[in-house]
Amino acid sequence: MKDHKLLYGVYIRSGLVASLIIMILAFCFVPEFEVSPFSPKVNSEDTIIVIDDGFLRTDKEKEKKPKEKDRMPPPVVEPATEDSDDNVMTIGETDYNDLVPENRVHRLEPVPYFKVERPPEPLHITAPKYPRLALKAGIEGVVLLKGVIDTTGRVIRVEVLRSSGNSLLDSAAVKTFWTYRFRPAMQRGRRVLVWIKMPIKFRIKG
Image 1 (cartoon, one colour):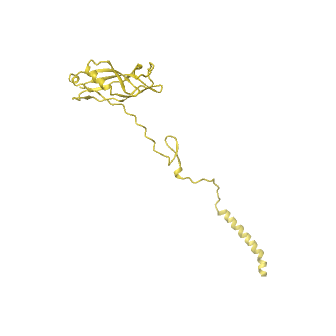
Image 2: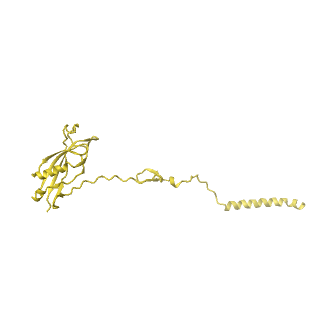
């Protein structure tokens, strides 16, 4: 027991030295801790993405961009005959007149005498049949028509402004013109009645 008391001081000093050595070794070999800001876990379903149109949406909200509504293609006019394919009927460039219908047409107020902001656009145009007798006789010509397009895009009046010189061609052109459909003319945000002029050409190929 006496020996332990004599060695008590030695034990204390040895323990202190050992503790100091352990602390030095721990300081040298244990990696340094870095403090980083808290970053919450992000759910992939809520990830924000940027789509082509510039709006921000989540993956759940991502949808296919709607297809642009196809505009109706311009009407294609093809020749039509009763007994022969050796003819061609073409419709010339439409000349939109700045005239307006009189008040008696559908009892609507007349449009002022200047060009409308948006002239009527053809939506449905068909080619008239080449009159058989005119075709056999080799008669060609151009019929210049003038018509009134109403607020629904329908033809409500047709006049022969300049005859082809042949009544058969004139009648065929007028008959077909009644079947045409247009996008109504617009003036100051309103649909308006308007006159248009349209030449219809009858030509025999070959």
